[in-house]
Length: 105
Image (tube, rainbow, N blue to C red; front, side, top):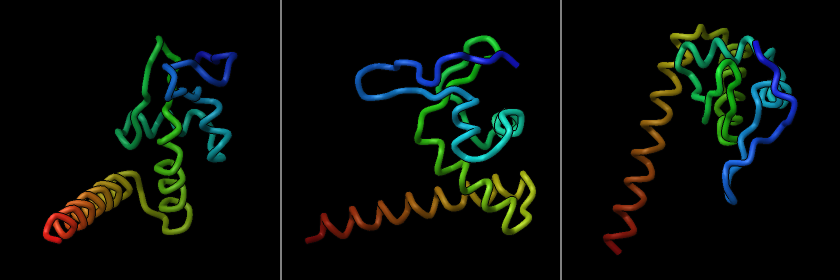
């Protein structure tokens, strides 16, 4: 696996990307495990350059949720994928319901 020396890769004025190694350190996982999560489709890198992956900081809460599901509940990767998908759908429905309520007022 290629190591990228710098921690932040400029991505424009409003967004910076973190290297795989920085993301791994922030969530307390080995970079290879995060790469496995990418292969399994649980997280998506913002950019790939050869072997190097860069992530938007918004992936950190998702990775923390994956860690909690696996560590605290013993959920396997397919189970994690299903749970995260259901949570995302539930959140989208909640936002849609809130928007509809606001529009009725």
